[in-house]
Image 1 (cartoon, rainbow, N blue to C red):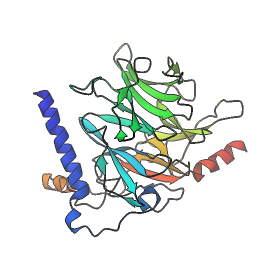
Image 2: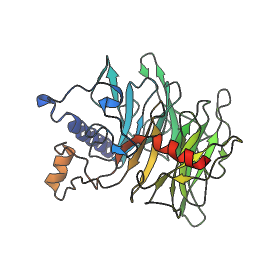
Image 3: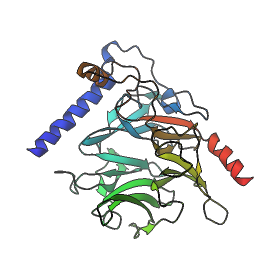
Image 4: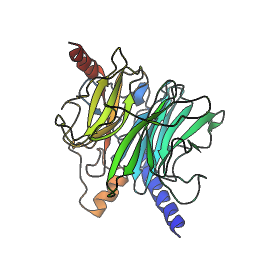
Length: 343
């Protein structure tokens, strides 16, 4: 009975999200989207909402985007308890299509995700069972590879990485080294997070190593996201004295001796008084994407009918109170922080 109930919830989420994207299809006179990044005007150093009404939908957009090197796909996530669905928008013959549920998602709570360097593998975390059917379990890290016919079947990374706790993907480097977060409980049941890395050893991942400072600290902190050239990393930290809001984005730079600089807060122009986290990069490293819970003047539904209208996509702005939106900014702001660091 519980399984049938979950399937019904999944169906409702997919239908509502699909209605959001297609509600005006019959009278749609919107322009065809062309060009990089869904044809969006690139931002400056002040963050802007990314792809309003497309990726930032007014629902709970709390992860992404993930973009392969050719720039012809954009993956993002819409979360709706108890499920989280990964969506994809593809560019074919220079034109962007409609959002679709990624073929490996849609049944369980699928979380963070990112591409391998060559774009032929996606690493993602999910609470799906090991045999991809049945009741959800704890969250593990999974991979899915491209085939000549599209994406193959997801596979679990195995017990060298995954445990009876919850694992969340953070980053994958060019040499396939992965960085990830494990959620644990202490002796009195309090949750805490520890960040690890694991190297690829021919055909499997090595036993994880606990990361040193600044990638672990006494504060709430999740796994780093490294820039495409791996010269700096963006950290998500909550609790430092130099914090702007709740979870904030920080940057640490790699030094010539291989160690890392003291994290610098990206400042009030990037971080809000709310939560800012889950950073990612454009493939060329020119743009930083992140998820923010900041209030930007959106409508907040007060009644059932207003909430239903929001789900149907009748609002043209994201809806505050329903979750987060995806923002992007030029990484020139990080280059300026690095210049100051070297003075």
